[in-house]
Image 1 (cartoon, helix red, strand yellow):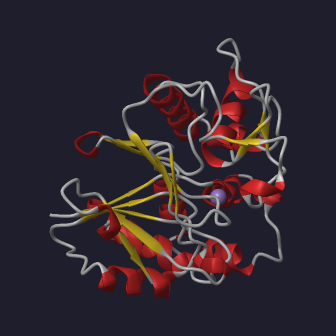
Image 2 (spheres, protein in one colour):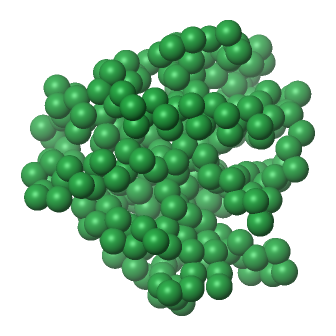
Length: 269
Ligand SMILES: [Mn+2]
């Protein structure tokens, strides 16, 4: 039995199938954990959704900003953009409601205790302990499932970008969703910046979340996606596996096997 974390698929269905060949994926024994952004831009988002839905007994998904954007457009039709043909195809599919209601029930954070590993889409806010991160993720998952329309109507926006445990209601939910699914850089004062998205060296006044100090000590490794310009990137017990397939890069799977040599964890197509 083997478990793998898969980077941002973004609708690249053919490449996902090639990756499964590459890792010799065994449908009856192995497990996949997707680190978010399974849809958008690759052209085959509907196929990706259908495949993961059909194999949900061996798949787990954390939600990324593109997945949430798809859900927002499904639950709040006025957000739909006519130019996104890929999403339009999903909304026109006979199994759309089945797929969207399944996607809505996926995770914000997955903690794989056996492997001492956390899987999230963008990262974990530096000042949060693992316990705090799991609690905030759980609360957000509950909000998504109990009141999706109200949540998606109010999800968009970059404020508040400072954490305070007294934040309430949609302000708290927006900070939590943004930090788990959109975070890259922080300002020195701990506020989240959502504009910068390039390489690390480009922004001298901003600090990538995994370098921000003080960083709450966590024993678990964090595997994340979302930042394709980093590519495969190891830092401070965090690993980025968004290697930008949709931008002409590769699709990456990280094998969760503690007995493996470090160089053998990575599979790419
Ligand atoms: Mn993303």
